[in-house]
Image (cartoon, rainbow, N blue to C red):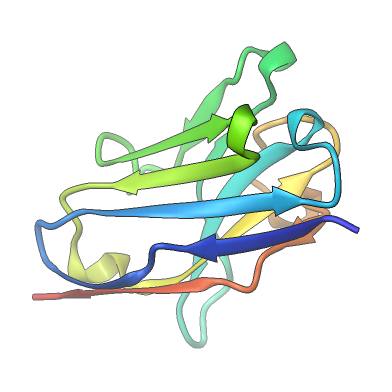
Length: 126
């Protein structure tokens, strides 16, 4: 069974940076597209960034709010996907979730993902 474990969340001031990590175990990381989503209370989970597998060119996609500030990457040697977040804003405050999907694509859609981590809290103070 695939397990995803996120880390790297925390409290940061506006304008600061954080790097989230998600370690993938129990399955074939190299075959899974990986995504990052976030959620705040009372709202639906929303797409942040995703990266496809190597044989799909490791294509990356970002939400409009993440574009230019966040970078998603994957390290096959460490079975880990990262989300580097720069120039953080208070509206980035959320629980961030890592997800994996079996078709190797960088999907923006929550239902496309088969496995989810437990989430890590990111809080950006103004």
